[in-house]
Amino acid sequence: MVRGRSELPTVVRSIHDEESMVRAWTTITQLTRDLHLGEDPAILIPVVQRMVTAGASLTVRAIEDPVVGPMISAGFSGLPSDLLGDVEWRVPPLRRTDALDMLSCLKASPLLAGYRGTKAAKLHRVEEVMMQLAQLKDDIAALVDIELSPVIAGVSHTVVVGARMRITPLGDVRDPLARSLS
Image (cartoon, rainbow, N blue to C red; front, side, top):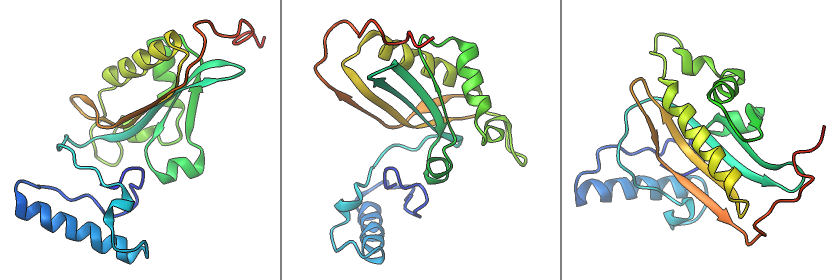
């Protein structure tokens, strides 16, 4: 899959040996040409990862806002969600009810509850991932940006497939005015 471009038909499954890897690389190379990006498929930043069970694909992110302090967001992965702004934000600490509220406030939340015959995702683990990320961000100001994507919320379990973070040297103490906007 090409990271961050879920709308492209680039998922190649069942790569078990050298021959199937060569076929997958050939497919990605052709996509690179079709998109007029040259001959090197590395420009698409392809990712090879183990298969996980099907489920809703989420992005959970935590940032350090210079005014508010730590903030956490949740939304569905992919361009439609990015373009429509279907993302919910909260300020830590995050309780289980806060995490569930964030997920249920998303316009696409029916995808988590079972949509058009699919089974509902087990949200308990997604909530835990969100709460743990919020706690980590609340504890460490220098972690200015952490993104877990995709987080696959399945019927029986949740899997964090990808993660990235950015660390910036900051002081140990946040601005005392952060979070005092009331």
